Amino acid sequence: MSSIITFLCLLILGYVFKVSGFLLKTDADAIRKLVFNVCLPCMAFKAMHGSALKSSFLLIICGVVLLHVLGYVLFRLSNGRLKDVVFAGWAGNTAFIGYPIVEGLFGLDGLSRGVIFDQTNTVMIILLWMQKGIKSIFSPPLVGAFLGLLLHNMAIPVPMSDAISMLASVTSPLAMIYTGYVLQMDWDVRVLPALFLKFLVLPLLAMAVSSLLNLPLLDRDVMVVQSSMPTMVVSIIYGEQMGLDTAFLSKAVVISTLIYPLSFLLWNALL
Image (tube, rainbow, N blue to C red; front, side, top):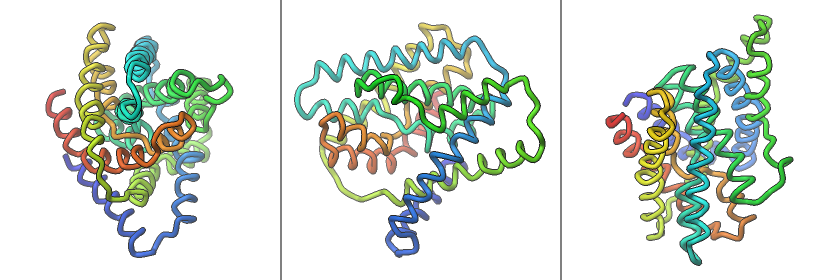
């Protein structure tokens, strides 16, 4: 509970920075670039390098793939504006918000599973939902996770290890401040079914898939928590390329982020 209050405080701080003019859009863009290109890769590297590798990681990948196949089938069966709702419900913020929450709840072992979930999530959105080529999946966090796996059995020089840890440690506050900065208060009734998918249907499906795959308890919990994340900020960019309603997606991002603490309390109590 204390961790979600801390994250809420940081979200509010980011919003206050915007309305007060303390941070300009160029400043927020610089924070986003720093988090995505430097801090998140360091966090992913640290998680994959420092955690014991488990065979269940492959099952997590299978589980995420199955969830996205189910979501994409629903997306294809939907007509018109319902496609926006389905995509908003399935595209979770499993990095900017997911990494800090998962690490806070489950520690480094949980974070390694959160990274696996997030990277598979991103790959599936690009390859399946957006129908992009394989070259499009490579991103700084994915490279960081891959390098962590590649160097898993190798000792990292202390100065470099300390630098990576320091950069990883600022991911959470900077990501929350940036998310707070981009919040804009607006309402759309279609957000309600998107929230229903995002905070109830998808986590329940994740729980069912975890049981089907017989995942260990920690892996199941991470799957469910990551599935319950609010709509990802970059869904607006992805949605534009898919011909979806970006104005609606931006509202889904904002409202789901603001409502997320209720989802956190629900699933944290149930797990």
